[in-house]
Length: 257
Image (cartoon, rainbow, N blue to C red; front, side, top):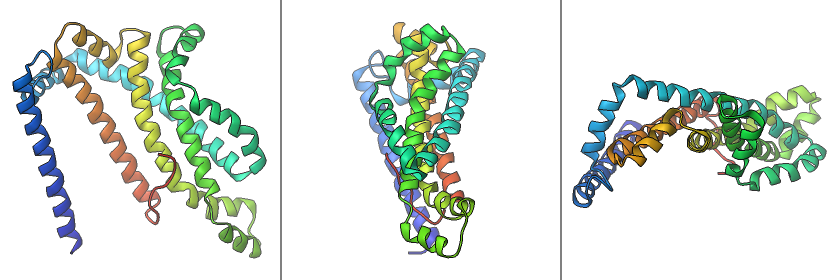
């Protein structure tokens, strides 16, 4: 099948599945009732009204401020740590117990600790987002380094490659798909951390709107706010996938997902 035909076929299947889902949502919403499960058309109308509201745009900005900073810090710390502990076995043996502890710790349970340390504000929300995303970025980067083919390293050694050349020519290209998988997971975790922080730490951003609309039983606006968060997450994931295809087109993504 030609590539263009295959793309059109995939796009058609996705469009049909989306149309079926939205139709089922519309029918179910009209049968159940707007108070419990609003129809898609009602949510769409609510979203259009919200999108023209300055308060809604301000809420998006406040939420993304903490999410972007927290995720960038998580990537800046997690990727080097994962690469270092994956490259040097001794460092990995020292760090792995702590990474395992961090991986198994319920991240939500750290929120009260962040409030006691940083108070209720932007820094605390950044810390929550960081704690949600960091460990998955680090563990995937480490897994990518460990998955490097030993035969490639031995061949490079036989040609007299230096450590810097091994890292840039062998280890990093081999680990890149796993790193990007960790980035994608980290993005989804960062979005979740953004909402959790706003719901538990105080009324701010999109979390404030979720609390308000849920408490006032405005389920159409509640669904519209949640749909905004979901759409933003999907856009960020798509951008990460496009970046992965550009950086590592030779290999299918791998890692801990």
